Length: 400
Image (cartoon, rainbow, N blue to C red; front, side, top):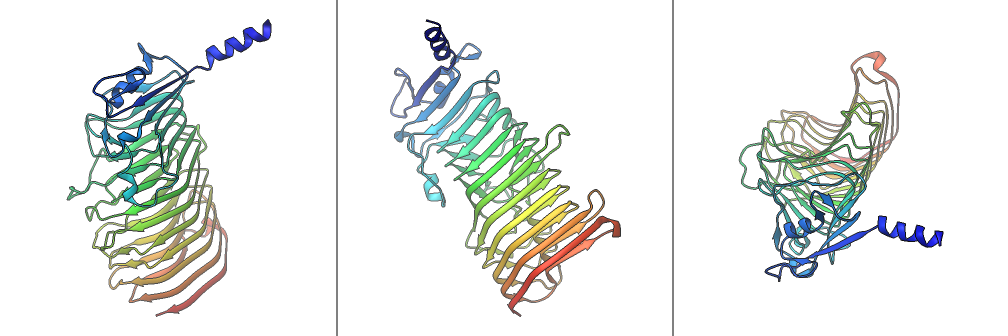
């Protein structure tokens, strides 16, 4: 009898609700709704989520159609979960063509994400179009786990002719675990995803597509920060493929890590990118600063071109402690620098951390350099700022 009561109590506590978005409907029918708003409202009983586990599924007839979220918050009381998912998500996305075949979630002034106080919040198999707006800001905060999987995230702003001075970020704050996997990100330097004071950030098996935005728009696609002194943040990025538009573009920032416990970038491939478009701003593909442990391992840069712009960096590590950079390969590279300096790997020891660095297996195989390009640059601004540095297997082939 006691076991039966306990089982009944468990079933009451672990309740779930499944609703559907069906674009063929003109009004709600059972657990199906013609709009995303209707499906979200159906999860609530007054101001409370009616169940602990909640799933909104977009049916196949929603593919290629645009959906919005009204001006309201999506929230719980710390124990509930909400998943927005396409019924037939792709296993992986490597080009923009797949994005048009998914339900489109438009984030704009009248449709924004404000999500808080959930155990889990997930977006699976959606095409997210993040459009500039300053009237409302997108936030995901105080959530146990936030997941974006098998989705597209478009951060481009094709109509802009000048950089944004504010309201250019999608905020993820105080989330225990942030996961981006098997997704496609389009970036032109105009907007970014800002992840602050999150315990663990994991990005695995994603593709970036870089295109040309305003020449002075140089915001990194992702910023990982640790502004709270009560959180120890770690970032692990792996299996990242970076592709570029076929025409020359400004070298955009891809990732920036600041004030973290550890940052790991591994197994990254950047292919056929012409970064020779003129800009007057400093740019870095991968930037790390004020971090205790930095690991950059397994990066292939193939078929890249750098223009005559000042301070363009592939890898820049500033004022960090234990730095290990290994298995970096630069092939079929052209540097058009004449009047300005640029760098492949730049590591600078400064003041806050005492640098201990190890560089292993760095290969430059096939490069044409006109002038003023450093493949490897290590500098200590003060003698006390560096405790040691080792360089193993630095190889140059066919460099002219």
